[in-house]
Length: 112
Length: 110
Image 1: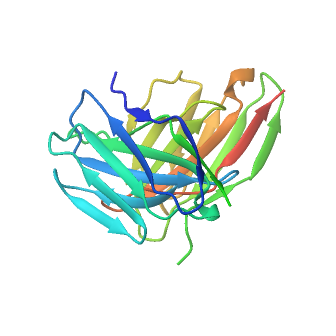
Image 2: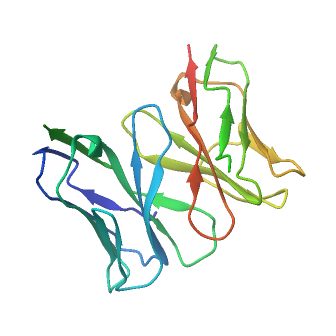
């Protein structure tokens, strides 16, 4: 079945550092989404990408939809303690299945 | 605008029992999606409802079922509960693109 390989699995960084995580797949996706999940909560949408090559920013967050449509990355600049959480990438296949394929998540810890 | 609301927040059931989880989508959203997030695993697609019809289901046994009501709210039913059904069950809604998730129902099977 379709899989998303998300890396790194976890990161422990100093406050103020930049962070980068990415997702790759052997399948082509129409849409890439990046979510953040805090403990006990549902995932919250951070950035949505709809077009190959698209580069989108949301405050300190920047994400890109890979030109091959098989990958995406998320960068967080100047990390702060509230960036702590689990970040998920999710892709939507060209066929309208209504299903999002999720990566396994990147756990981010920020040391003040 | 109210987000996606799920109830109950927590649910404890005994193996073999049935569980019913509820979801109210964002007003105007016609599609509802259910996902299972077991501990240590990513989000696994369960079901997609749109305009009252089941449009797609994930790789889960038939004891996972649900429905969508005329007001677009949805119910997920899990019959003959097994210990491995313990997980966070997330509901999401969408109109066109971008899924908005609720806070989930934590189901514990003992």
